[in-house]
Length: 348
Ligand SMILES: Nc1ncnc2c1ncn2[C@@H]1O[C@H](COP(=O)(O)OP(=O)(O)OP(=O)(O)O)[C@@H](O)[C@H]1O
Image (tube, rainbow, N blue to C red; front, top):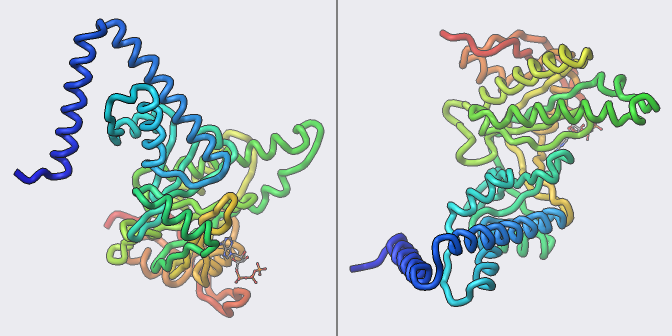
């Protein structure tokens, strides 16, 4: 019989379980076994988590196999006579336990993923790594070590810039607000709320690119799986997300007795995505479509979502109510007809 990889793994696992069962029945009672698993399990978990944090502090990419290998080495160090395989189930539990999230942000034959570690949550630090085997080595050695640029062309990406222009009026450094720290605390809460919305399943196709001051930048359709060039669901998701941001800020205002105002711009087009820098490598996108999206924000109107003609054509067909703003002068682009997105899609 030809052994498939799955069968090989199952046989291997079965053999190990049998060996372990024999050892347990011969040498140790139930209580000792439980203590062994608890003690060693805790130690292995601790060692792996410490390693994970160490790699994160160095701002280096990290991969699933990397964490799994760390566990394997630790296991072998503890009981060198047993052969182990570290299964994905363990890694999943490890990630849940430590609140670690990995998310694919772009892909080709290989993919880049994003890791979020609780230690860095408050600092909004994001790191990118390859999640598949060889990913780490290929990306890190080829692009980082040789200083070559990792880049990828993505078509039909929907880009959004959302700004809170009057945040600067709110930000003052006074003794009473701990030299501005309290203002930053509120900004952090707003940005964290925007981030949180992205965990909703309907916004899975959207990636936060960055936040710079009081401007939030996101893009959808950066991967083959998230770019819906037929139904444009990544564009409607972005429209809904922009509308949700506006609602969220209204909610923050209501509860913090502030009057922050949001201004949003959306565009669609080709972009170049890449990871820049050897230290704190940052995933970003560039191109004329990004510049225009930024201009849709900067030339926009407070409390409104300004979109380009291309976005208008897609949203109109999907039943979204939009209003024509008219012709506006956009630096470097000349005259452009733009539209305001008024509300969610109406049910036909
Ligand atoms: N990846 C990006 N992240 C953040 N902002 C971006 C990005 N790419 C473009 N922009 C912004 O888009 C805007 C428009 O870009 P463009 O190249 O047309 O103008 P510019 O003349 O270089 O910029 P400006 O007029 O603002 O000085 C710029 O303000 C730029 O900061």
